[in-house]
Image (cartoon, rainbow, N blue to C red; front, side):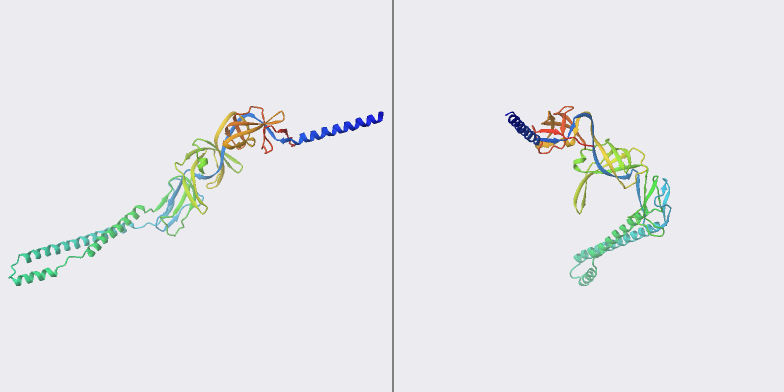
Length: 382
């Protein structure tokens, strides 16, 4: 009997233990493993990250002239000073061309005036003969016959001939104006208006120059700026005076937004139209490693808050109505808290209401995480 009692007791212990284990396992299955972070007080800086193109603040394109290039005094990449003669052209005798055009115009005017004077004389003579015919005695047949014969022999100059004379004057005027304009635009050389470096050279000695093509470009490579294009959503976030971090490879430079265009511009491509707003950034540090027309990364400081309660951005859940929530762990239970924010960076969000310093918030809450859910913090092994 004593042995049976012991056996029965062991059986009961095993059964009770099994039930406890089963209940523990069920309870453990209802516990969600979560990663957490502690809400803490600190500073937050929000940046707008984009790309910019390096340009020179002092850049000058010099156009050539319709003349033969006599001498090219510079090379691509060469440093020049203000006043240096960059390109020389063969001189053109445009004064003679203007004088010839002036004579042609004067002759056209004289010929037109002479034609109009002839026409006036003919019309006056016709009027005089008509008057004489009207006042002659009808019985004087011989006189009437003579007057009528003279009248029929006269004919005014046609409108077409007079118009041709007018057109000849207009054409001569156009040629004269063109010759004068060429004389005004004629240059025998291109002279640098500022210090800089030759970054483009499009002329060759002995070839004809062109007034429609840029002959040489001089840029100040030591005085640079970064140029960006802003979309409609970012344009309202960028203001003149904001600090900028400029990154090129392993180098970092300080900058400041110096100019924003007053109106957006629209570009059209095969992919469709795109509207953007241009802005410029002054580079405050010496930037010898930056090259004109290269792209750089820029981070524009669009907002900052000191000593604010903050949590990782990955802990924020956005619901309908643009309401923000976080999940806080309290005694192993998840509690949903609606929060209000003041600033957000790529990594952190500032909190003004809803939680307090030291609260543990759930990171990247899954759909299994809800208000009242039992949770356990996972331990990450480094």
